[in-house]
Length: 313
Image (cartoon, rainbow, N blue to C red; front, top):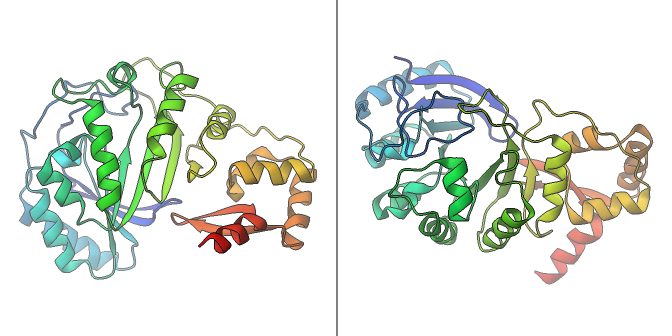
């Protein structure tokens, strides 16, 4: 039974050592269409759980072997917040982790439970999934247990973002023809405007899904990113199967694009043709474009935006 996995080097979170809270069974309150695990009925609790002392013993050994990791990531074959001893586990991890950060990857549904809500406040970093905010789309894409109401989940995510003092990340995974419509994106946008977070990661299907659904292209993700409010910290996370769509941008187009949606160097490599990359470099050299850090990633933005923000603050 492999409780600990990694280290895994992540562009978004650094060097991560993972803890699988359900290493032998899929135990989840969702049965998402895009899940890389085999289909399984959604459940409300774990039927098979590991003792906290077993996890801590395995983690202690792993930290001795890998002392320089950035993050201890809590995950599961399913949903980690279903683990019944999560509160005791995070306390035990905090007692031995030193300066290493803790991160949990959750589908957000358990935030409606007051005890789980308080437990997640203890983590240094939390990544919440929010694939849809309308009941119809939520039911289709995430296939939740019948007791889960997305309207309550949405309110809990908003409340959590206001109380949480660590780094909060939101992840949206887009599935072709399901949550990539203009109507659902507009409603996601309105919800996200009320959530205080470090970064919003837009992704799509990168691995073989449990059900016959398909993802969308990098170009489509980029077009969706443009539909969100420019104040939101949007980041395109899925690039594994990204196809380059090199386009010519003049100086004005570069500045307008970065004004509307800051881009990483990875985005630039996929979006800009060679001549546009040279124009961008000239703008950087002229200090018209600057680099900022947002949720551990570096983005290019118009320098005037940074100056404007400083003046407001």
